[in-house]
Image 1 (cartoon, one colour):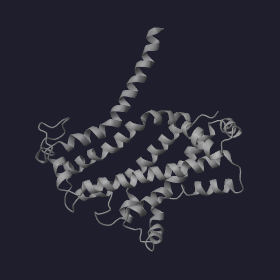
Image 2 (cartoon, one colour):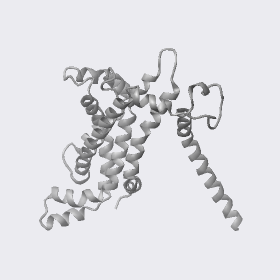
Image 3 (cartoon, one colour):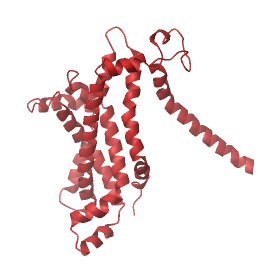
Image 4 (tube, helix red, strand yellow):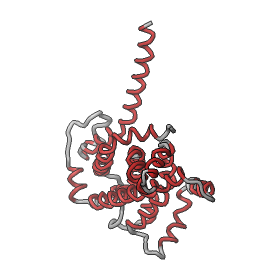
Length: 277
């Protein structure tokens, strides 16, 4: 009986390890190519690790390319988008969770409707709207677009966390003399820290990796973000894979640090928001 139980457990763990290896292999290959000299990229064929390593690709990306500017622009846009969206989603999600008001379900339906259209259909109308406002080719305009498209999903995500918190907590606080806003700020928000972390992580990742709008709304390297900046390593007749992969490795650093800081709340948020009561 013990052997019969050990076999499914071993197969289960083996499947998990296989999945982890499959998921991490592209990252491993990204690092491998980034430290491979150009003359060995094709001459050595397929190898698990290059016979010689170099940091020349990283040095070129940091010193002789516009990647630091792309990196800074992406940090500004992604950080601003995550902060603004989370603040808006916290208040709107609380309103949808706690209040009954006229046209509530119409508003919810309209928010869901915004998620149904392919983004490529909206590029031209958005460009036409932003042009008179002089918000094209600017980080502020790009942030505004990202906020508009991420608020609906983030609102529903935060609503699920508020639904899981009993209304009795804030009602008890208001009986003791606290205003609704004070009860929301001092009692409800601390309990939704996992949800806030999950929302921050989702929005930051979405803004950090977005390419379509940043490519269509930004022209020139001055306001370009990291995904657009990667295209600068692709010329008409060649692709500098070493430099591109080095830039990709560097771009992973802020995302990894960000999730490292919020991982405790993120793990709680990904599970707690799915349970009510």
